[in-house]
Picture (tube, rainbow, N blue to C red):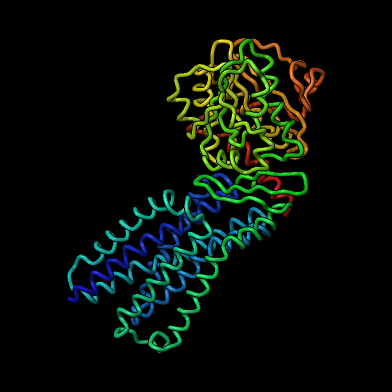
Length: 512
């Protein structure tokens, strides 16, 4: 028994256990960013990953000799495939349709799964060669699972906040390559193939490390070029937060904000959207002193609300601190939101909207939801019966709730699902309406209350878009947009997500 070699192999098992789970998380998250529906993406990718691990484990029986050489080669291939997985996913997304992209992601995770499946049996055999005791398999599984725990903690708390997906995949792949190099050095007397014992393998390692280092150092340039391919206009601001990819583009006088590739506003026409979300509700209120804004961390909705002198407080709740920081410091956006966060009436809470409503004891005259579209389960829950019930409990008796409600033209089922969910959660009156925002197309909003509302848009403050005579058209929905038999959205049955994504699947099928 060689105790030093045994400890080394157990440590190796721990490290490759970390890497294997990180690949799974990196690819699942990348796919969710681009395709939405995180439950579906994580479920499919985890399923294919585990099945592929089983295939790899089965294939390990064909490796009867040169097991040290085989393990080193597998680590090199795994490191390369894993390192390039996210960069390749980024590149392929720019040119593929929905189905093609999904297939490509599953192909990559299957290759990684097979290679990972080969690792555990080989490590068990290597430990048996160094340690004649019977606990080798249990030791391998123990250290592998401990590595998985570390990976699941490191991914959300360290890798994504500080490195992002692209750099993280390069780092994890490099770790696998380093493991291969260390095993080669540690067990060079056990190697049997000419390649592993020659100087060529050292040159290969050197080339790989230079390549990885170069890609890591040039990551910013790569992402900028990729963003410029994906987005119509030059990228002037880009960062990744724990929750999303944040991109701002600028073309002459037009600025656009994208979150995970989805447009949030264009400075050319955002005033239409934000006027429609703020002013019909504000001007229909009996009292408008205390306002709660959920989402809207870029400050444009707050800008509209601050036009009312009698307003006393605005509590703004946004999950992503990087969005709010950008709205306070990125000069083009600061100018667009008219320095909204410098107003002493505005208090910012960095928190999840659901958690805030559960813990908050304040009563508001108006609650406005300016949240991203329900592209994932975590977002769909913010359009659920339970969420709207919580929001209603924080309203004064004559208070009003209003939310953006996706496009009644492109996603009519989703729009009417939000309306139905508001009714189901205790709001006796709902007032759906829509306007045209050129950057979005036809866009919908729903106002809700427990008391009847006399909807109005007066001339007490100057507006660029809305006027009283627009109200009838805003509240009219043609027959082809109205929907029957739509179900409410619940936390444990997020049907809204299905309604919303249905349109984009149909669009993908039409484009093929």
